[in-house]
Amino acid sequence: MELIKKTLAAIFAVLFIITAVAALIFFNFDRKAFTAETYQKGFANANFYDRLPAMMAETMVTTSTNQEQFPLVMRGMSTQAWDAFFRTLLPQDVLNAMADDALNSTFAYLNMQADSAQVSLTPLKTAMVSDAGVQAVLTILKTQPDCTLQQIGQMTIDLLSNSQIQFCNPPQEMTPFLTPVIQSQMQMVSLAIPDQFALISAPPANDPRQKLQDARLLMRLSPIVPLGLLLLMTLLAVNSLKSWLNWWGIPFLITGGLASLMGLSGAPVVGVVFQRILVNRMPAILPPILLDYTGELASSMVKALLNPVLLQGLVLAVIGLVMVVGAFFVKARK
Image (cartoon, rainbow, N blue to C red; front, side, top):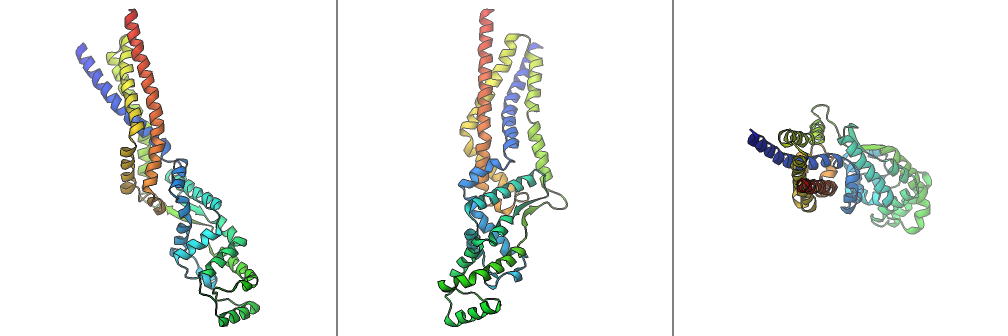
């Protein structure tokens, strides 16, 4: 009977080690993988913030924005032209703030705190009616062919009659005359642009985020499994201080050692696993712009996950080592 108990206790100890290492990974994944702060540094290194003008440019071309209210020079602009326009219009700190807003909104959506992930275009609209808006239009004009004498004459007549101007690349001397016209046109453009646009919205039925929330709940509850195994092992094998120190200390030491090893050298394997999850499982949940950054997402997840796993593993290993050494001294004193 005693042999059966010890055998079952040993099996539970092995299962404890396996499930405890898995629980450390799952629990920390749930804590770290669903907050915007985890990814901001990694995305900064991956030039995600520099991609925001391209994202807005694509939105201007593909959405149903009423471009009839735009100046003639801005109607039918290509994605590349809109990209150059936004880069001239928005300084880097504003772009960074808008990208952070996009990330925060995306993770509020993933955490089911909102029904859509959106980006506010208010900073863009504010910049359009400022001097930066005039400079951005002048940048567009420089991409046009130089004005002919006939076009300059027609432009002068249009300026005097407050008519719509067909822009070309005017000489520098005409800039003071064009500035008030550009300002009035930019006012109209800012009214035509929505205050915000949606990166992704929840479907009316079968929201895939619900499965993600169910998976996260299991991750949060994962430590219960090794704790239950530890309790069963204790009931079967522990009958003295020395046996308690050994039966807890050795599994703690092995678990902490494996977790620390995973934290130190598991980045390549874990990174590949996360990248495959993002590619195969997340397209229905993440905005398309983030799917272009699956490598950076996976890298940021790995860094955020493995650091606490390493620290917690070291703590478990130290606790286990102290208990094993304590068991030796208890035996020696006896």
